[in-house]
Length: 324
Length: 233
Image (cartoon, rainbow over all chains, first blue to last red; front, side, top):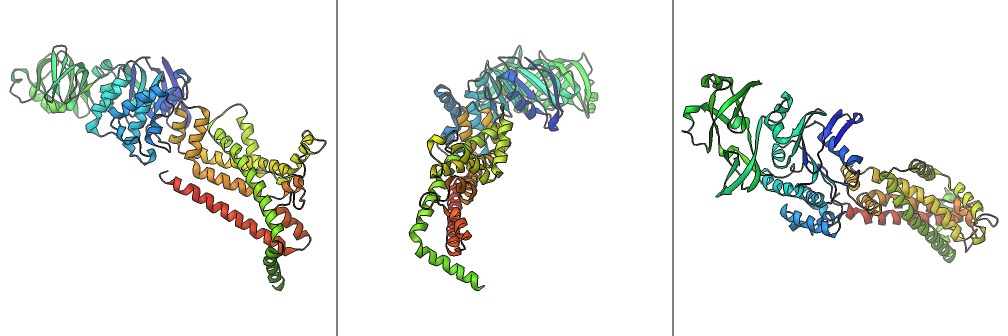
């Protein structure tokens, strides 16, 4: 489904043309603060194309709890079956213990989780989430994102966020929004792997996002992407993605690739070099494409150029592995 | 000054001299105004929530009716009700003219717009995320209004007080449709008009004091009712 949305009268200058929302998939709309994400998802929540008001399940950025217990709020608008499902989700999101409490007295994070459980359990055609992880502590995000990913699997959903972890965990289709306009959109690994627009590369923080199959044992998680094995943080099994910043990637001469303590050392071929502000962005093919951001001085020392072989290293502690 | 002091003295004397009559008038006043406030609130508050939350065909006209109704002179409402229930009028067969029933009907028409208008303001003034949540939830309409009214309860309490204040203080409508018949349709306001016209200020002032006390009691008790619930807003 394709949408053209213009909201000229609220100062947000939202002017979105050709927004694709593939049914049965999760579309993540990613962008910096002020990009128009909340305006856009609020507009979609009322859009006839997605069923209109009351027919979509919509998590507001700051969900409101009505007077009554948390349990009452959790079941609002749900039939018995969906309410049971909501209670299960509340348990997995860690708020099942608060269901007897008065909802308005709960903390912001608890309200958010309750509303998230309710929205995910709502049997609507479209699920819309505005910053689903915003008030969640960083340490919990990976686990909670796995719950959200499980609940969204195979459903039509739109998620807006400025958190790259949310992109990694949830996105099938990725839309990059900036200043009210679409900078780029497409299948997530294509957009992440080769940001064609300069602006989208800036917004994505030159992040690496690599899909594969994860296996965990003894606190160590290994993601297999083809022949490449990436070790990182997480306790994930099955389909997953590894996420790490381009700044976390170090390059070295290919002959000297194995004298480091890094879990992740590979040898690859330099595909391209491009200047991004103070740094140079180097794309290296190690079987998958990896983006490294290095200083021009380091590049001079290494004598790296396109087509050359180079050693690539990433600390395992800099890699987050999230299930999808 | 002597005159005023005398009059106030007469007022206190009136409580003992005309105690039973005054009590009867107070009773009817509370009955008529209480009943019409309840009916006006039961209709007006949901109407106000509806107008605040929905847009539909004719909602603009309805909104205008409410706004005009909040300020319409009670005598006009009384005149309208009188014509409708006059013996030769469309509802004449009911025989309600010059009965407390007609007074209640007239006052309900006065109470509805006030209850609806104040409620609409209160619900419409809820935070955008509250309105957004109410609209986003897949709820039947009645449940949506209940949630909205619950969230705006302080304002809805004000709507009840305002509706009661509107009906208990008016004289025009009850005078026209009730006729100020002693022991049948005489209420505090029509009693004051009657007595003042005959220069019997003592009873008029006594009735006025009772009206003030009733207003005070209603305001204080409704204020207490919604304050504890307001915690955690």
